[in-house]
Length: 380
Length: 223
Image (tube, rainbow over all chains, first blue to last red):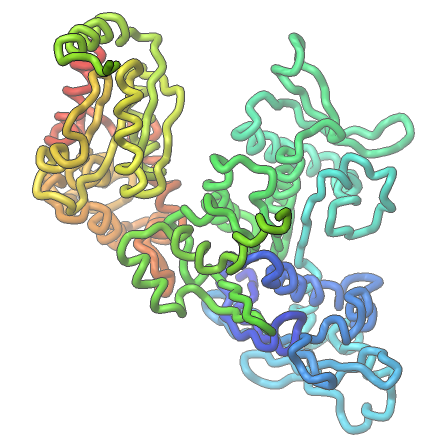
């Protein structure tokens, strides 16, 4: 049975002094701007960075600006950062547990303080051992990232490898010339080369599925295809039927923001083999399409993707009456730290919903910025 | 000077509209409480060849009731179809009607489902049983009498022999919601035209509320 994250525990990660939450297969993160939705999603990207080729512990930390910028401001200066996840399936939600505790040494180089792996509750790795303490090199590498030492928990390694994050920034897709194309770039600069890297058969199959889905929202679009231009650059193109009297071909450079973003989301849902992380999938989409996204996600979960972590503050998204309160994670900022809890753990919210209110009406004001109205006075 | 029409003017005016307006190629405007109601409204429309310009989802009954007077004014000169659930607001539909829309515009079809459109879905008992794989005898003979038809649908799903249906329709423990993740998608599928899916004629046999609604539409469009 496919695995998913079942539990997340954090200490001093970014703006969270403490997080301790259960995770369902579909997770919605709701909170005001700067409440840390992206920071929470970033934990899963961090785990992916630990195990990806060219990644590893030190680069995962340094790419985030080092320990001092990851460590929560509200934490004491020398506190450790802890990331701990449980992974399992419906029958065994605690099949695996992986915990990493780290800090930095005098030279501000990241340093592992603890790495623990449990299988069905039993410890199968616990380090660093006493003899490792004097070897700085050993404390800069997790056993997870090394093929020799992760043999007993390869399943965890493989699971982290399959975490998929794609947050398409349309401008980057349209003008890749101005941006260096990075491999595994989360903002999609390599989106087209990801498409290019598939075998022709699988690519055609997946583009056909994406086209069928896109046409529900953009009915004038047809013939979504892939091509390599004269100078060897990959493109996607499609016919647009009401553009000119004869259907005109357009490439990604003239696709609308919404079309490009939806293409990216569909690409992830049809292709990802592990947990998919989506940031504000509602961006650039019409509310009439957004309100069906939760149902689309649930359908996709039956076929392809096993787990999805979605950040959103779209009213329309949360009008879906099938979104579980245990799937909804609220981020409520305080003066120094953000409180994180499942909506199901809030009795007041439950009562309001019993009264027949729409989830959006209940949770969005609850997580709204307290001084939003003051924005207007910036121009006074 | 008042621009309001005298009662006589208003009557002549509405007569004129009735004679002129309800032609087959006129576009309709609609409003509903939520998604499932919209699927049903679109299905009814397709049965009678009604074309909608737009259907406004109100996101809740209170919202719909707030906007109703505006829709009603708009129905002076364009056809409107508004569907709302009676739920447990009033003892019967006429009582609710008196309160919610005391003066209906000429081209307004305002229908109150007793007690909610979910009873209309169950009213095609045979196809409901087939589609959701539940025993026919467990489906109420007159779903209009149910206090809470939606709740009954979820209870019926517990008896479904299909694990897909059970997973999609029943809320998981801890979800705190009244329906499952894919409730609305499954209802949408059930309302798609097809032999083994929901049939209007059959549903009318078991729901007086639905039959009245259909009679009303027929009278309105002259079919």
